[in-house]
Structures are given as structure tokens and as C-alpha cells.
Image 1 (cartoon, rainbow, N blue to C red):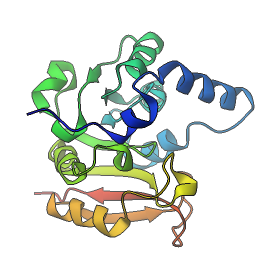
Image 2 (cartoon, rainbow, N blue to C red; image 1 turned 90 degrees about the vertical axis):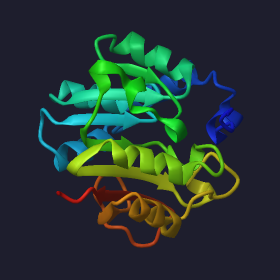
Image 3 (cartoon, one colour; image 1 turned 180 degrees about the vertical axis):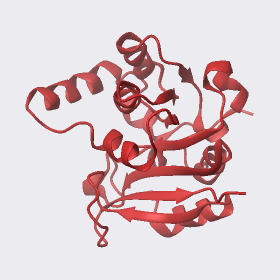
Length: 211
């Protein structure tokens, strides 16, 4: 059955890779911190851990974590983004796949789970195809080893999204995680670790309980 079109594809048309990479290159050149997501992940699991960058885009998070000694795999639905990632780090596994219908076998031998941490940065969850969010969360949770972490950051209002309004709330997200067998561990307001106080952006850390 044909998968519904993601909100990301509706917004970008599937050709945003070069523009996205240029945007972050300009930010880095200006002195902006563009590695907050990778830094938080590195605080949560030690070097050598297996990390899946879910909705990896141009590979910014996975590449930085690989530089820090992590065993990383990137997966994304947008081939234009993956072209940039492959050019920047051809030695890393970059997989073209839909998170809402992610077949673990599609990750191949180099990318097969289980993972110590799965990170979904950059508004990945709100930009999935409508109605597929719970299935995507369940699929990501299934790739975690017991004791593994799912880390996801996304906007909760239009000011923090490339959308006219929010598509996902924290109550829904927590319910999807609970249905997937995950338990809440931490909730932050930013990737820098500030505590969440009810603002328009949240970073959630959920745990797959040890057996």
C-alpha cells in the first residue's frame, strides 16, 4: 500500500538538501552553536554507543557524533538531504527509508540494530505524514536495546515549526511512547539541557526499560 506523503515533502517538495546544508553552514560560520543535539546525545550515552539518527537530513547530528566516537547510522526519506550527507561522510551508512514504515532489514548489515540511542531532531515527528506518527514512534522504539533511549525534539507551536500550527502535542507523543513500551525519563526545553517550563519547544527522553 502506498504510504501517505509526509508534511516535510509537502513543505519542501523533496529538494531541500542543498538549501538546508547552506543554511547551517552560514550559521556555523557566524559562530552559532549547531551541535546542541549531538552534545546532548553524547551526555546520555558513552562513546562507542550505537546511535540511529532518525530523520537525519544532511547528517549534521550523526556526523558530529561519529567524530566523537559513536557508531552512527542515518535514515531519511528525502534523497536530496541524503545526497549531502553521503558527500560529507561517505564512510557512514545513510539509508533512504520512511520512518513510518521502517523495516529493520532496510538498514542493512551496517545499520542493523539494536541501538543504544535513537535521536529524532529537527521537528522530525511533527513533519511525518499525518496519521503515521504512532507507528513511527513504535518502529523507532523497537530498534532500541533494553535500556536504550529515544530522544526527540520538536516544536509545539507555529513559532517553532515550519507549519501554520502544531501537529503533535506532548500528551499524544507520550501516549505513543507508552504504547511502544517506553517510559519517560527527562523533558527539556532546549538541546542545551534547560528544564522544560511549558514553552513552545520540548526535547523528550524516553527509556526502553531493561529486561
